[in-house]
Length: 229
Image (cartoon, helix red, strand yellow):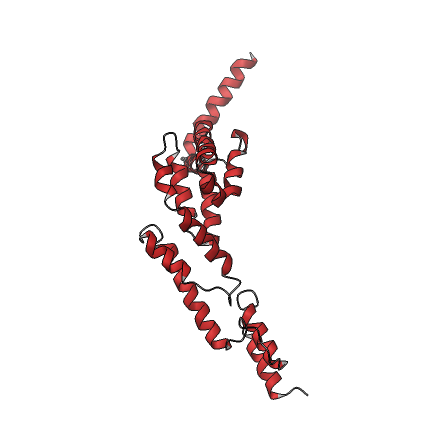
């Protein structure tokens, strides 16, 4: 028979998400096992941890939303004040923002650099400040926006420019830039606008009155009979 303490432990852990609240799960487990010497990262009460994590998430979201509006010195102070020691699941996001802050002064130079593809620049500038999930969607959307060889060449020239002149910025999205540089005209996605036009045209044809189809059939029949003579 389990004790009251074990019962409370089970209730608490079942309410937690192990992906985002791994620290809380470990803290509860260590408390149950009555380990006296707890690591400072897990010694915080579960409720306090949850509040701190929510506060840190709010700070991250605020920075992401106003990244390009906030003064650089204010951004640096906000990033430095973020303590992720107790929240390993948020550490990669904060580290990413820290790297982007360190490189922010390079973006105006890139935007003014002769030969830079501005579509690529604007997409890159937006992606580096987005939450991870939104950044994935934005990368895919940009690739889908490349519809012809001329556009592809301009984008790939922009990637080469970043790689050569701004290696620090290249590192921020190296995998994405590499994917863009490897694109070929044959691998470009079909234009959704073109497909929509075809669908609309086909639907319009199907909505033609019956006598139009009858006339068309008669014309085709007459042509076939004429060619067989």
